[in-house]
Image (cartoon, rainbow over all chains, first blue to last red; front, side, top):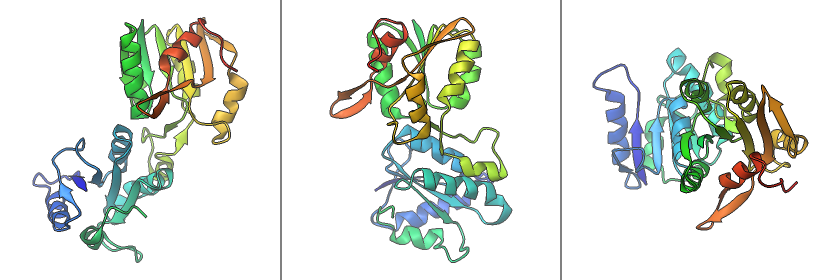
Length: 116
Length: 156
């Protein structure tokens, strides 16, 4: 599955995006691509950006990976709302384990493209 | 005519752009309703063709408000009033959502078939005429335009 990673970060080196790409690249089901236009699956940390991806390609699937605590609070609310509005196209996962929900890294290592 | 087309669905935007340009119209296409107010104040349009239901955007939203992000919003109704008030001569709202599927589309049954006058400009609401392109059903925006201009009676 062609996968595009777009993580907004205040850090110029964007280490989180690099780390997510590295993890995703170890999953043989995922092929990292350079643009959203090529992608079948997009990983982002911004719910507003996720909505744009969903409108630009009616087949693309999106995972919103949210930061913990107050930093990610607004994106968590937005991501949960998007997942309800687009149940077969949007998933949410925390960057770090929270409330028993499977966190991002183990999820990406085994993700097969099934959005259930 | 110079036409503003606003629809969150890519297939409807793509089909509308191609079909309306083929008829010789100049078309500006918007994906996000949050861009409409700025664009209509910067450019003059003869007509506006709008979707009814679009996913709620993050505009002005924060805190609990973000729990509405992406939820279908009947934004076509206020946009129609805004655009007619801003001087767009002909405005149409066309939905492909069935009237059993969303209350805003059910209300369209009350609105369609009537010509509204907003600030001296014509506004019409309708269930969208549809057509197939390569097996995909898309809105027939030229037909919407014809009905808006009064060149053909609504099917209702």
